[in-house]
Amino acid sequence: MDQRALSERGQSVLQGINSQLRTLSWRTFDIQLLAQKAGRLPGSLDPLLRAAFQQAFKDAVCLVEHRQCNGCLLQHSCSFPRVFMSPVPKQLRQDKAPLPFVMLPPEQVPRQLRLDLLLPFRVRIFGQALSWLPYFLLAWERLARNGLGPERTPFVLETVSSEGQQVYRPGQCDALALLENQNPAFVAIPPFPGHCRLQTLSPLRLQPEPDSELPFARLVAALLQRLNSLLLVCQGQPLEGDFELIVQWASTLQARQQQLVWQDFQHGSRGQSQLGGLNGWLDYGPEIAAFWPLLWLGQYVHIGRGTSFGLGRYHLTGAENGT
Image 1 (tube, helix red, strand yellow):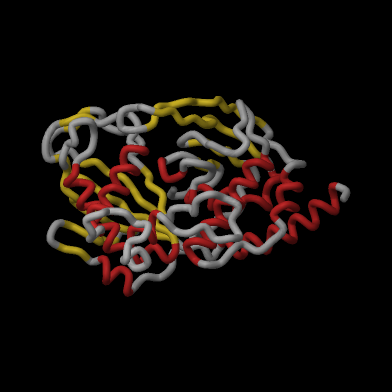
Image 2 (cartoon, helix red, strand yellow):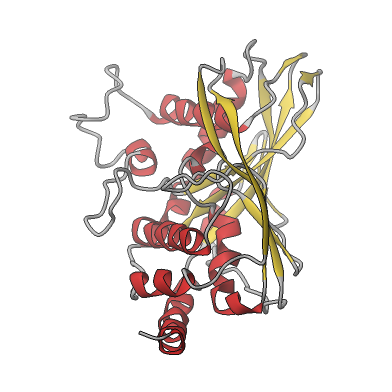
């Protein structure tokens, strides 16, 4: 297939995919924890928050002594396996189903905590997982009470809000009212600005792992896989389209400029393991206009491996947005 025919067919297929992507819904929650005493936090809060949240969620909802999900009589009605252990749909070629949320820690993490210091972070919940919001709130309460950091510094859950609407404060919870009046929040995709820069906010871990370059086709393949898996697991509707054709077309396009480096960092509460990924930026020109909706949505869902640990976050410049 020549370049012109590939481009024409690719644009037709991608137009259909982009229209389906507009059905992906989510809600972003702004959470504030209030420190109850002085303490310390590690430099990277992403994996700490993620691990603490999963443990707090199970502590808050598990009703049995054995604490084992497999074989539990409540497995199919309990919120914990529904959120953290969703079965992998047969259409997905991956070992685990995506979690129906991403966590966004503060850009500046205070290493030293003091009494009454506010620690903000955000959580974005996708699709049908929003129906479990009361359990998320219980888990955030428990996370605060359990404490964070090497000294398990205790907090209290001070406020939870979403899109300017207060959902929680001590002694008051409006989660059910929010869910009853919930309208799916479909993101508005602005027009392509003609040129854009993709700036990483946390390392990108894509398969196969590149050293210091990111081919456009690899980025597009990761975006399609991530968005398809979220739509399928969180909303029960897979993306329909010829992914191979889209990736083939993307392989004929490249960044105008890119400056990326592979960065390793320690992972775990005691830094007992390492993760790594690409950090830096890529500049794209008008030739990638048809892929703009994919790139735009990728800011909200994150891409690659380790998204639940805060990896795979990026930001596009060239148009205003609120990610």
